[in-house]
Image (cartoon, rainbow, N blue to C red; front, side, top):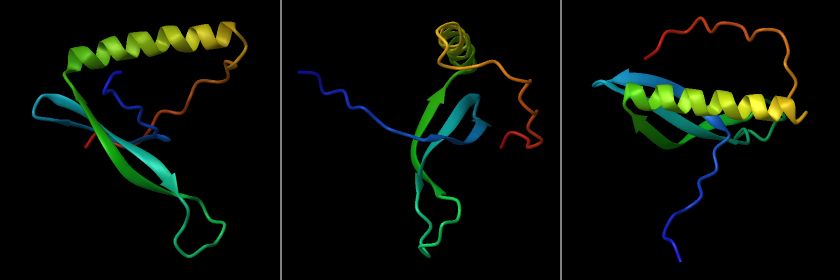
Length: 89
């Protein structure tokens, strides 16, 4: 049996470019500590670090997979996503 583990994350919290490497801070969402029904709070779980060429390869793979999901009817194409106004950290 393999020693590999599955890791669950809800998404990417931040993306950094430091020391020539792209770093993705992966987060999970936890309930608000005050118990109200406000938005969940992102909590850092893991960091993925790769060279810029790895990022390009990942982008191409994800684009192909998204296209497959659209073709299968799992996702729908909508208007262009808004451009983030935040700068990379």
